[in-house]
Image (cartoon, rainbow, N blue to C red):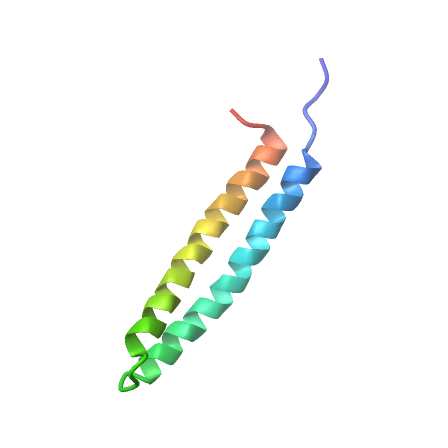
Length: 77
C-alpha cells in the first residue's frame, strides 16, 4: 500500500486562492473606510456596497483556499 502524497497542482491552486483572499482582505477595508469618510458624496452607497461585496468575496476565497489545500494534502472524501 502506497502512502498518500500531496497533490502539488491542487496545492498550488489553493495557495493562489489564498493569495487572492489576502489581496481582497487588504483592499476591502480601505474601500469601506473610504466610503464612510465621504458619506455626502453621491456615490457613497455604491462604493460601500462594493466594499462589502469584496469583503464577503475575501472570506469566501479564504474558506475555498483552505478547503482546496486540505483536499490536496489529505485527499477528497
